[in-house]
Image 1 (cartoon, rainbow over the protein chains, first blue to last red):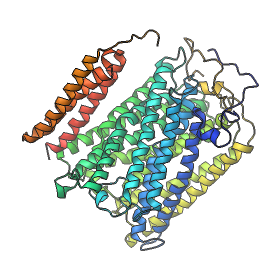
Image 2: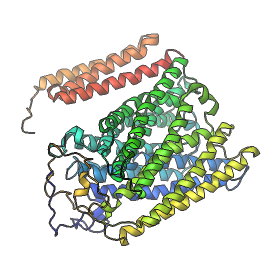
Image 3: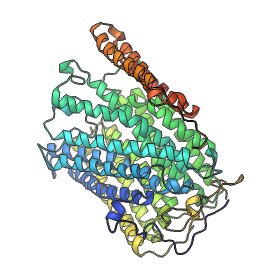
Image 4: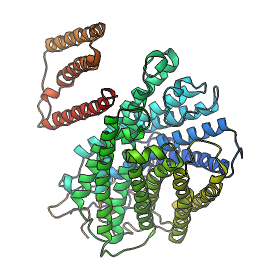
Length: 537
Length: 94
């Protein structure tokens, strides 16, 4: 492979002085790396709010009855927690941060296809986030419908719902434009010689994700517009009193929101597929099988939305169909897990922090996946629907999946992004506290759900007390681990030791450019030879 | 790209398409006056599909574009119909 040469006088993207200075050099920058970091910092702010609300909920549930908030406030807290965490953290999550930062470098390009559109996507993200926050700060009370905005309550609730709905709508535009940008970039800007089957797995996962972002997001956009029209004009699409059908809302909402789970998880799987071979120093096992499973998840993921609606009053025929399709989508996910484990087999394992996050990702994702099969089975679903079991399941999948992969990815790519290495011991300490806290926080919810504790209640029966205490304690341990991780990374970004260009001996293209990368990544676009590939150890 | 051909579509073709779209818009409104029962959605879908095909083919130049793009759009249309089909497994069997 022909690698790029880098003159020593070329400055990194962090030091580059363009037309604008200071903060304007960031918010007007069309550099994909700066936009990736803009997303990361914006998401961090929202994440702090989301975590704070989550901790407040766990504190409320530490004892039966009112602890720190009344029922109405609890409804508002879980709604805003959900809207922030889903629409502003886990959906943009890895694509917006690591996709923006690394996709062009990993395919040997100088930027994405549409850099200005990329910046516009971030503006939409910020505008959407501000709109959602405005629904909390102004108007007749914070939205209390849950992040799903279910009809008919979403147009009956007297709370300030319109800005939140409009905010989610605008956030959707950010997602669509990012997806469009990635599809075009991957089709048109791969380095010469980098055929589809020489492309690393993270860009492949972004490709599958981008199609979902592009095709599924407009559905929820239109649905939210219909809810807004229903609220303002009483048009009767979803309102049964006017001849509408509230189950239609659930169909439309989940036609987007279930594929959105794959928008969250596919890039997470892509990042894990980069970390595992690097820290096993071994070619990824079943490269093409992982690609096929990525595309299969993206495709079949469109057809399983109804498993969120098994108790909604849907027809039996639809229930059976969705149940079968749900079981089918488990197959490609399992293929990935087997491939990751096979990659580690007889590898030269280097248990650094990214690897620990990746292995624990597999662990928590499997717990989330298996509990998903319980929910996908019609008979079992009826018993645990709308209980704490569901909350445990989706936190294992969504937070366990995206959270662990995100932290694995940031520890993996950190030396490339900032040119410095973090404290490796503190990184492992942070991981240990986070993982123990995570399992202590969410595992008791499986038990609570099986025993019949409903979700979204600020109160519970005395027999659920012990498990709720354990869960609340877990939330504190997990947050302590999170603080260690974040402080370690922030400190190291500024004061950490200078990192080598390729500290992990990785084989993908981003490790052939300086750390941090220069503005246009490559002096000369790299050329892939006949025998070059992303995982040739 | 240098190798891609450019096509200039005569204005009159655009005018014909525009007229067809306007006519079908009125027809899709008109058909709501007829009670088609279980097939009312099908009627609306047929008009919407024909209108989309006209827009994609001529206004968006798909007719003259690379086969890959036609394949992509075709795939998306199939996906869309699959989603509609599955949704109606609920409505027709409720």
